[in-house]
Image (cartoon, rainbow, N blue to C red):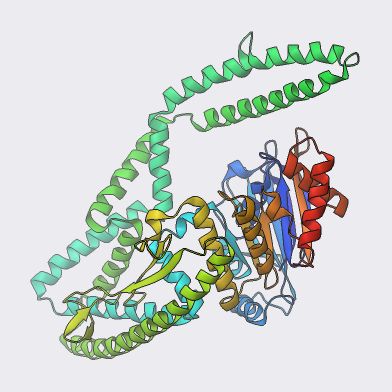
Length: 575
């Protein structure tokens, strides 16, 4: 369970220490106050990519620290984390785990677990066990077929079996490559070795990392190409807002002065004066953002040339070994293995063939077991997801799981004289199908679900998975997007129900969700001040009623809104 989050000089936050509780933790605040900055800080300390633009303006270093308590977690979750830490030599019997991440303006970063420096990859591994974050990105992830298989495997409780299957598949492929190498004649060996060495050297020169990093290179190239036009546009807009002789900010300052001079004589002028000042703040922030963008767009000819050369090299590699970076990296591993084994003797070939036959037998058996487990689990998952969708106002929706095998004469798995492919994750191609009602045809989830439907489908899946593959903390960032009214209330009740089995932290803009009132609940408000930046405070019962009233009726809190807020909390008390 996440007990405490400490954030210093991160984005708009100067320094904050937030104490979360078990059960439901609600985070609300006005648009633009910085609610999602908290999620960004959590992502950072859980191992996400760090960039210097996350550091608060005027500071040299950002620090994010998260304190977790193992004793309140389910035994299987706590045991899994202890095992990871023990393998890394970090577990000393402590109940408390402290994750810490630091980034500096020089681009250097450090990661710590319990005050001991560790690779960021270990931070990410531990973080995955401790926290499950659901945001808008995950709504996109659920559109990917690979995610469907992962969800089904988690529900079926076969993730370890699938990892075993991947290892068997990798071992089989490596042995197959070695066997191919030793079977070549001498002349063919030399030609093959020359080609492999060339490919390996080329890929090593490209320093391939991830597909996301390559997309960033392409984005940076595009930005550099358009930088001059963008800089000119920024300059014009910046002048209109702040620099020109008769800029908008100067006019607003004049208006501020005039109204402020008369506000003592006419109190009604206070509201328009506040709005003018608020507009000035937003414009100053916009101008600051434009300056930062302009600074990042400065074009270095040498950088542009080096960037283009690297992109050309990577694109050439992807044309031959792609289409993705992961494909090219997989080819690299195969090429290295093939090259290392190409000098093996004919006797070695016989040994490899024998081992290959044994591994194939194990691979086929494991793939069959995993497929059977998936098919059994799929029936249960369909029923449980449908039950949760009914709770979320989608009772007519049909949810089915398609499991198919791919026929291929080169396949390793045989059944009824037909052969099927075995992939690293097994025989199965898993895809979620959906239809609005029984009368409609089931279609792939990625083709028909709207944003609001996607959030509810993901919430239904989370509700099922948390009972079978528990995690200590679940975080939801605007899972209520695209819903309202009774559906929003149903989403709130589902989140409240989830908080009985795990700590739930929800960022919301809907009073129906914020008004949930289970036995263990904490409500936090995020606000933004021009000088102090983003601030987070825990609300008292009275403040909570006022915040709900604001969410119901807007800035001007009426007696009716206050009464409605009290009724919501009373109706949801203990649920």
